[in-house]
Image (cartoon, rainbow, N blue to C red):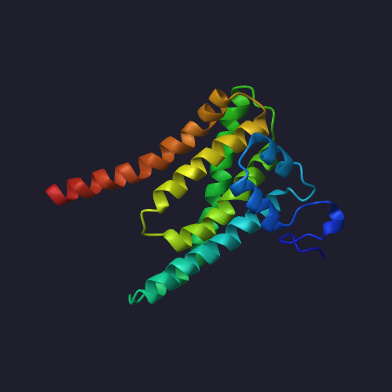
Length: 192
């Protein structure tokens, strides 16, 4: 049985670390086109990456809290696998909504390519988030993720930058709407 995290070189494909490194350090349409055309570019591999990397990122963030002298509650530890499952669900939903919008405006890519393209940078960013959680570095990391999302959509669907941005807008608006709504509820509860 071949391990999907590190396929043998005989398949002609890149290892997971090479893929993640290229996605993060060489962000271009050509890079993502190359990555989604790898022989091992599958949904299953994408889901496995996101699940495992979120486990690692959550564990690192919780350990960092412990090292800072805080005592993470046992529920925090127990919640890490749930967080990993939610990360996979979020990947599926984000790719699904983006795919629907992209196809509606003339995109030609398929959903497997989009899920895989998103996972090539979301997985390593999940690990990185564990190290920067609760710091000012989380904002630039999130903005970089948004830029990579647009590049990935452009590569998968082979259309203009404008259409790539339009395809990503529902995810961006949804992502912004959740914390804004939470803040609004919190502020109204504090006043009342």
